[in-house]
Image (cartoon, rainbow, N blue to C red; front, side, top):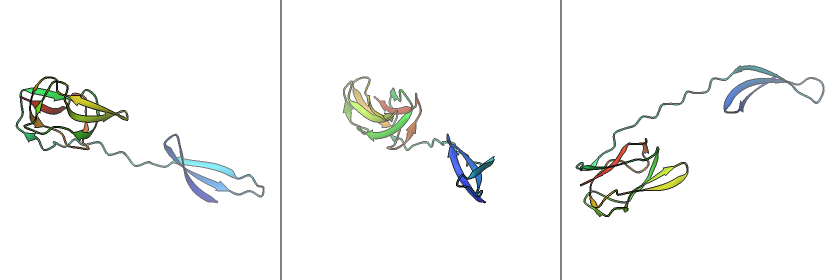
Length: 123
């Protein structure tokens, strides 16, 4: 008898296969294997670059920061890209809502962000 681990629809099972005289194996299932529990995502507080300004730029959706296109002290016009956010395999350019100066960048490249999370501030 041989024991195998198989995965069906993301759930793991331990199975035993016994060869019985013919060419067709007999498969006996046993209890599902316990898959390791996923560790919950921990959101660490990123290093804030610059001092916080009065105008907040927040994430419109959950995703991952792919790029930071501005730094504290940069002058930006309404519509200029500040951060590139990947969500649902699409790159979304997060733009300045108004003219101003970047006061702080509140995320880092590669960071996972939630909807409404502060990305940057302008003054």
